[in-house]
Amino acid sequence: MPVVVVMGAQWGDEGKGKFVDLLAERAQVVVRSTGGSNAGHTVWAGGRQYKLHQVPSGILYPGTLCVIGHGVVLDPPKLLEEMDRLASQGVDLSNLRISGGAHIVFPFHIRLDEAEEDRKGDRKIGTTRRGIGPAYMDKFARVGIRLVDMLDRDEFLPKLTALVEEKNRILEKVYGLPGFTVEEIAEPYLEYAERLRPYVANTVELVNDAIDAGKNVLFEGAQGHLLDIDFGTYPYVTASHPIAAGAIIGAGVGPTKVSRVVGVVKAYTSRVGEGPFPTELHGEEAHRIREEGHEYGTTTGRPRRIGWLDLVMVRYACRVSGITDLAVPHLDTLAKTGLPTLKVCVGYRMSDGTVTREFPVGLKALSQVEPVYEELPNWEWSAEMSTARQYDELPEGARRYVRLIEDVTGVRVSILGVGSERTQAIYRSAIF
Ligand code: GDP
Ligand code: IMO
Ligand code: MG
View 1: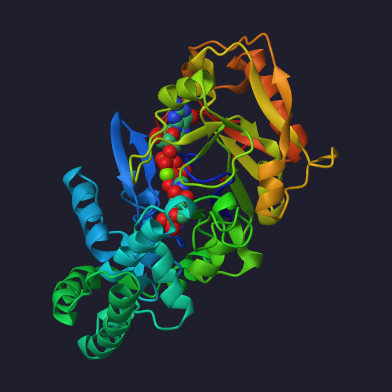
View 2: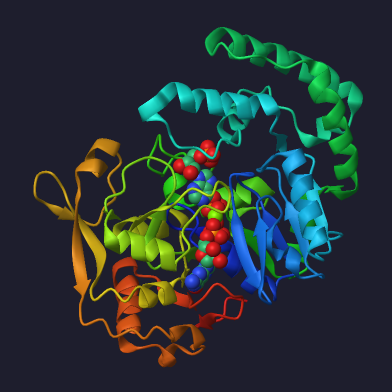
């Protein structure tokens, strides 16, 4: 009964959507259980592009049950917009199930996210401005409103009234911004609740029943290890747990049920938002990788910051999440850049001169590390590698790159990506 978690092992946007879509062909259930509309997962199938934010990437397979679990913060108008867009692309949404336990993102959360980013100025986090942090703050302050509350007018209205009053005080007094009336939120949100009602289910039972019945269950991570609230580059992180443990907490599944954890590692590093980035590139090399890899945010359209592959960071993700397999996309992108030499970070030189493979806890230490690079010269990758479907069809340079990833992390690379299309992948070891 394979239960597989797919998670990002860097700063998000590693290509989780592509690999979830790929693996979902053999899964009966796909579960999204962390983050919210901050995520943007791009899937290319049959020459068509699908952008998923809150809907699990398994939705393209008509027979696959797609579950949004408790741990997600749900933005109802954005979710409905996404569902409408997918329906207009011919996607069947009848297999979508949503947990009543998911907390709701309201317009005041979005305004507070924006206000706080603007107030911070140079110290901003660079959030997606989707209200994610403020919605999780309410959840942990135990004043949040869940989908189950929104489905019951009598439960919803008093809770919303109390929350709007509190948020208005903050918006007006702290930020000098206009607040909201209860009515302007209550009426549309009650309508959204009615549109979502047919999809609401007891997802804890659904997912655990599927596991007990021996079905293939896939967890679709959002964000990435370095954006984790505890293990990421705090405070430049998101407000949830993108690590493997977060996926099962957010779905209500016990740790003993997970059989494999697949860490997705882009063949280089990208990051959107602020914060230290030891292997960051700024010149022509970054430009070439960004353009060849189409590295612009799926959610915000922001150009992504680009750097060399950092295996100290990936090793850290492997340890914290017990990653059993790595999936490495964008080998084709590195090939297409035609860069004569690639660098891979295999250690950090600390300010006292010592070299380590341990990821530092403090941001100050991280911003002072000097990456120790292994250079892969005489670049022999062919730009046509996007047609390769077997590992031994890859040029020796690319295979050397893969071996280096395995040597430093101690984890096997089981899947490779050689293009954005669903079919452009190479399996070295079956996941399901
Ligand atoms: P996610 O958030 O982890 O799902 O990743 P995003 O969808 O935000 O960004 C990954 C981008 O890389 C998307 O545009 C994908 O279509 C693309 N992609 C994924 N795998 C590959 C690959 O192997 N090669 C290329 N060229 N593009 C890929
Ligand atoms: P996927 O699932 C990349 C980043 C933001 C910012 C920080 C906090 O597509 O990989 P937030 O809006 O969550 O409060 O922003 O986290 N971030 C992501 N970066 N991919 C994502 O999701 C991200 N979700 C959030 O850019 O730095
Ligand atoms: Mg993304």
